[in-house]
Image (cartoon, rainbow over all chains, first blue to last red; front, top):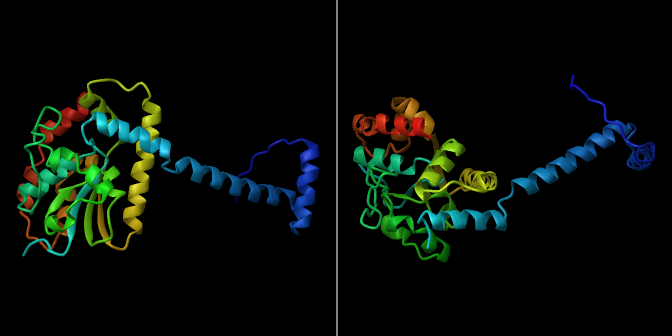
Length: 70
Length: 194
């Protein structure tokens, strides 16, 4: 069984999430929150892992300094 | 029996990740390799040589799409990770070397003769590049690949060099010479100095 930890959230947010979960026919608020968090974490990870233009510039600068590029 | 004339053979990996060592191993084993040591001769950062083409500055040609791949078919050449992103469609066999990123950065600092003031950031950028290129190599159907690890080769050259030799079974390489070419004193001292 997956280990779980408690997170406290404001009741007002809980109520909003409860309504959204109902709308999507998900009985458990917990299950719905976990799904949302998983989706957001995956999105964030993809963004963080991406080799961005900024990364490219940093690498290029380093390679030029080491004589690997003109 | 030799390397296939319809295939481009590449040694790749991040700069300072052991690509020169792999080229040196192949060369020692009698495997056809192409390099030009005139533009960047051996120095204290690579006492056994860089085994590069045009002093390693082929990245610019790759970016411009003017690198003559045809000319180097049937021979190993070195293209470091950044240049691999510009590899046109073709038929490739790639040996990609991985190395502990802290050692890669230490080696770059030593070569540049200056400490990084933004090491954490540059580490992230190189790690992302490394991951991106490894994924690309795994996904592309025109690339047959072998991942090797610099640190493992130093630790256990026999086992790891056999893997390299098996990967290029189309050429009859001298396995003993390949293993003997790894100057363990040089590389182990180098690891200890970092």
